[in-house]
Image (cartoon, rainbow, N blue to C red):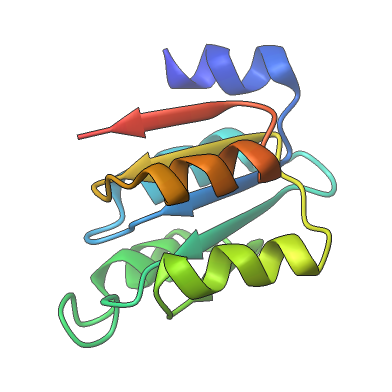
Length: 116
């Protein structure tokens, strides 16, 4: 489902809020692999301290190099991305539920998916 969804929208710049063990990150990067200009941005303030970098280690082991981890709270990272003029074809919010977060992600992204 996600593969068809991303492919049909030609989303090469993606954003994920919440990585944890990286299952969604791996899946998104697998879909993006081989597409010139593809980039996946991950916001997860707990990636090192709580998850011992499990999510990004999976991306590294898979050989993906077109991702960036922002290790700060989404309440800081998302407004910073807005100020920098970032735009994403797809945004996945995994775990955090906040009206402010939702509003900022809608501003940054053409398509928004919320998972619980």
